[in-house]
Image (cartoon, rainbow, N blue to C red; front, side, top):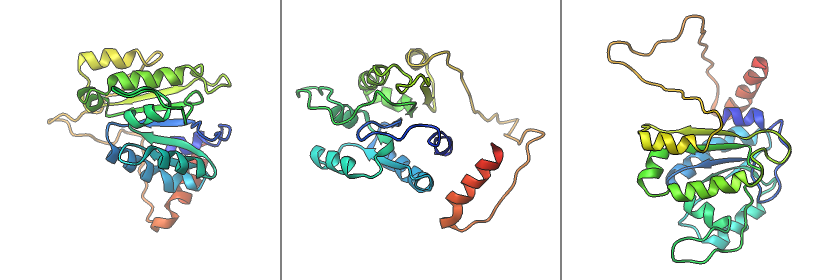
Length: 212
């Protein structure tokens, strides 16, 4: 949510049904958690987020998304329901009319991709990434999309598949050795501010402004 709060200030306002940021997650619970975690911070920037997942009637979810003002800049979604709202056909069912357009996505986050592969969701993930790429991969104005892949494990098969979704990927590994616990690098200063819960978003935005 923190990088998104900064990036949102540079991006054009989203059109209805055309988010700028997309979080793909394997389960409804995770989609709800991400949307809930992002909402308080991004609301300070007048940015809306929404969760898209199964377990809710399709028409009711479409009506809710269309009623949000301003339109949601970020979606946290499960592959199955998002594909449905984008007009992709699901096994045993015909494709429905598209209610969402992913061509303007500039930040794509694939979270817990190892679980999505284990759950048999990878084909749907690839179809959704293809919809994002159909927009040119640049949000429509030449700004190249950033893709972030997060996984607790990265077996060879998954590494090969995720590499196909990224341009010049860089790997960042966070691990803790038994004999060498994680420590703060030299030159990094840590500060603690005790802030009331309702004041945290604005305080964080002020701190980010100082970093810039």
